[in-house]
Every structure is written in C-alpha cells, then in structure tokens.
Amino acid sequence: MTDNEMKAFIGFQQGELDAVEMYKKLAQLTKSDKLREAFLDAAKDEGRHAAILYKFTGTQLTPDSKLANIIEKAYKVAPKRILLQGVALGEQFGGNGYRPYIADYPELESIMFDEYKHRDIMRKLSKEK
Image (cartoon, rainbow, N blue to C red; front, side, top):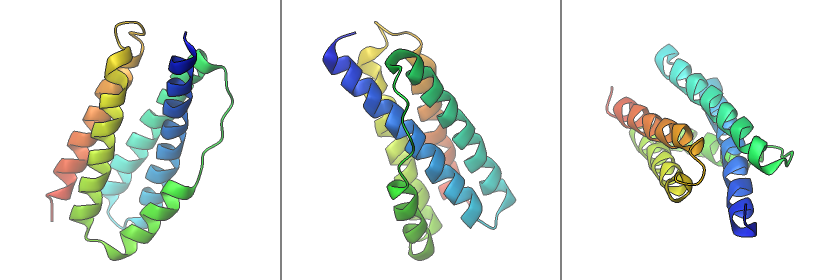
C-alpha cells in the first residue's frame, strides 16, 4: 500500500466512524420508528466498514462528534426532506471515493455498494411525508 493509499484509507476509516455517530444521533432525535430503524441499520453498516478499513490501516481511530453535532443542529431547523437529501449526497460522495481503489482492493466494493444503498434509502425516506 502506498503512502497516498494509506492516507486515503485512514480518511475513509475516520469518515465511517464519524458516520456511525451521525446515524446514532439521528436515531436518537427522530420520533419515527421507521427512520430510527433505517438510521440504526446504516450505523451498523458504517461500523462494519470502519472495521474492514482497520484491517488495512491498523490504525485505531476514535469517532469525531463534529458531524453528529452539525447534523443535530440541522435536524432541529431544516426540513427532514432537505436534511435526508444532504445525507444521501454525503453517501454518494462516500461511495464514489472508494471506486478508484476497487481494482486493487476488492474488499472495498461491498463498502461502496453499501454507501450507494444508504444514499438510495435516504433519498426514498426524504420523499415520504
């Protein structure tokens, strides 16, 4: 693994850990059982992604609560539709970030597809009343 790949993987790992916190925060804030379940499922996936990336990096990271705190503030003022579309966009960018590494690291493909799955779920939920 090159230094640049290691830096990217550490960034991915941190992003996955931060996403766990974000989804847990959303699950705490929502009053909807359906949304809570979707957020907790996504949090589990993100935690699994961080564990996969740890196998590559060997670096023990801790979640940063900044994203979760921003999301909490946004949740209180932004329409659910806008918030979930923003989360979906983040998942899209996340999935795209893995794409260049799949040929050399096929284990990352499942992470990429999970990110796109989360994108699709958040988009769908953003359209529900």
